[in-house]
Length: 245
Picture (cartoon, one colour):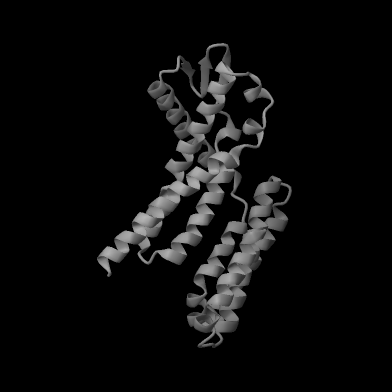
């Protein structure tokens, strides 16, 4: 729900640059409007063939394309280029399609399980691994889809998109910042899994079955991950200052 508000904020703060030169742009605007209408029609006709997530994704995407087309038509190419970030930022309103979501979750699970095994080896904890399942003394832990950290990954990714836009000038450094979200998320997931597993094994099994740190304690590990990304952002920003004093 905050995505439109962020777009409106950037549109407002950059309004002088965006609306300094206005003119109609019929070709580009109508092109995007037509694409938006086509996607909308496809969505309405494919309602029974798509699950709720994919249907919502297609319909939301068609609305955003239509909105971009309307802006392009009414304000012209220069205004559209100047407003490109707040307009494209609306793409985060679109639910991730199921096929892509499954691939992202699987990638996060693979990385989180590998990181978990590495941490178990470093601290010397006894374990046996079978795929995504770790057998510890007295308990077994499966790194399931809910352990992928997909929600926190999206939150971190969107936050870094905003931070990169505000603080970085170089395109490839913005990409580096965004790419760092995934290994840091996997590392954060691994720490959380190991922490809960060891607490359940050596302190109380309820840490795994009935404790807030397992069910709703993600924010405890989210904050250090955000701090690590802040360090990465600071280093990238500092390197820009060194190159362009």
